[in-house]
Length: 269
Image (cartoon, rainbow, N blue to C red):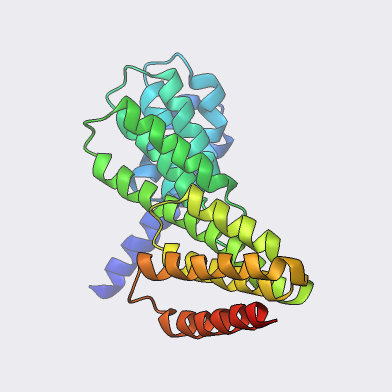
């Protein structure tokens, strides 16, 4: 019985492969469509794509075109080819604006771009593009069944951009230790706090601003030290007023002691 079953499976496999190869070579686009549809339903998206690619130029305007282009876009999406999926879904939305699948296609187009978003440390062009695509989807379909998922993805994408901006600003604080450019760190940190007022990184940003302000002060010429130490003291209070249980509280308090000591020394002199 097992031997018979194995033979049947092999026969079906060879038959399937033969059908696919014949479809690739035939000039009959109807045959290509039928076999491509079978491959799609079987989850064999790479094979489906090869056949859809062959018939796509000839299928526009045909009765089956809408279904074919939907399956074509889905094949790219389900096989992880997100650049092509995004393009095909957007093309579908443009070509078939009255389709019952247009809302889903709009959502999947945006989701395709979100899949291209890299880790936060890399260039975020694709992340911004994905946010724009989702915003257009949300504006067009404010009551969509996909709305909650779309908002969740946008939230994650925005947090990635926020983290990228914070790490960049923080890097200025780090590099300021060896290049002495603490002013650049202050500008970067101020811009970050302004651009992301509700950020979860605000406490950290305020601490690094305090650190950069103090380092700028102690490395200044004598005529500017007093004023800049006063700025550092203000930066300390901005931090503790924002978060009295800050993870940097001990370090900040130690810095305040140094600030007060330096100000007292300047006053005595």
